[in-house]
Length: 110
Ligand code: FES
Image 1 (tube, rainbow, N blue to C red):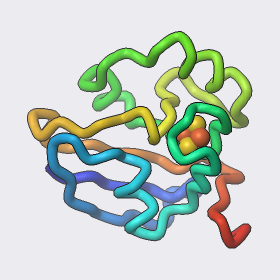
Image 2 (image 1 turned 30 degrees about the horizontal axis):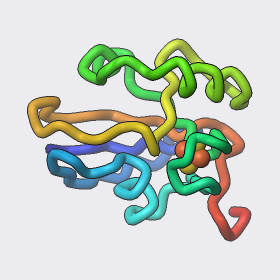
Image 3 (image 1 turned 90 degrees about the vertical axis):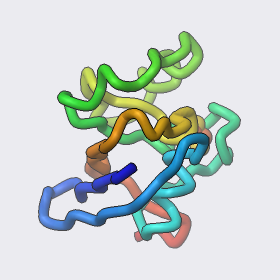
């Protein structure tokens, strides 16, 4: 399946391929997206916050209560915000467009 990462300002689009079972956070990091993912998927940081395109949001399984609680603490949260470490891809989704929120930064602090 195709994944499109859109930078916070919309100026850069990066395309990636994913398959069932891939973790969205790992695909994003492998393609240079500015997502720190400090806790490596332990749901303790929210630095993997991404905004899913509204037309794709309903393809995803619902967030757990713990994920929702953590998202409440993230900056620039929207109705279609998710934690990328909690999203395991399904090829049946076909495509997914993911926007990186403003102020996201990676481990180099960029
Ligand atoms: Fe920490 Fe996703 S990497 S919550």
